[in-house]
Length: 234
Image (cartoon, rainbow, N blue to C red; front, top):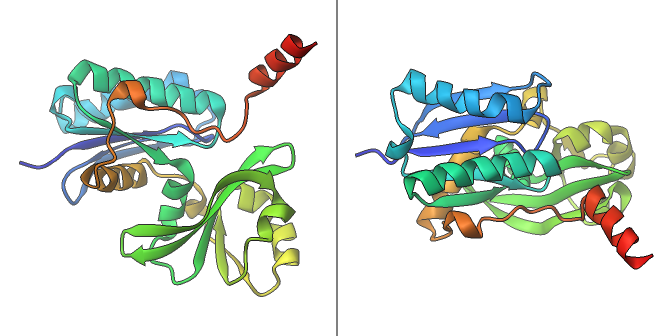
């Protein structure tokens, strides 16, 4: 019987839900409407189940983009996937948002740099290299940094993608003349199907967890946490 994986992605401005069989994408919804994730996510999941005639308790594995990215979006995604996993008793896998974004150009012979806008003149970024047709080797780990500081890690031809790469493309080209290449427009959005594919691979590698131990990857404190820390220290 086919193994079914349901994945969601809400760590950026877009939202996605995908249902994966053993080797194929059964259904996928991608939303770039500007409507808050809390409004669209559950109806989209229900729609996936409705059109595929598959029920939640038939899902074998749940996967979720766990960050870095939007603090609110990550919390919504993780709380939703935890609820589904707890209700069905099935395992869950957290997937790096940056790795899922990089997956859009999997197979490239160049280094891949997924880059998300972290605001405050900073980006979330990492560097990957394809080692198999469906997997990456991490060259530089995920971090939050200023653009110029992060680009000191880049030493060869690199494909940049993501909203951070789009925002800072001119700076990247100036700092890395002849080394910086940019993905096509649609490749700058994260796909839930990539989260599903990576999640399934991680599951087979033994990386699945129970819902209670799934945690977000923020890389830095939220504005609320910073404000609370300032109040407590004053």
